[in-house]
Image (cartoon, rainbow, N blue to C red; front, side, top):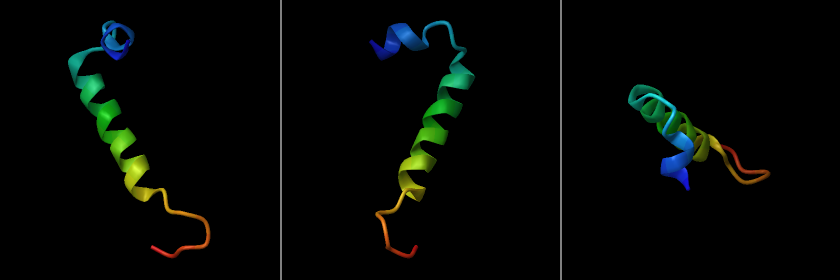
Length: 35
């Protein structure tokens, strides 16, 4: 599914998307916790 969805997107933009998604996961913290 992902390969088909990302096919029209350039390789560079795919890498950028993965990087940004990774950053979102890392910076998302549970409610009430302090980084």
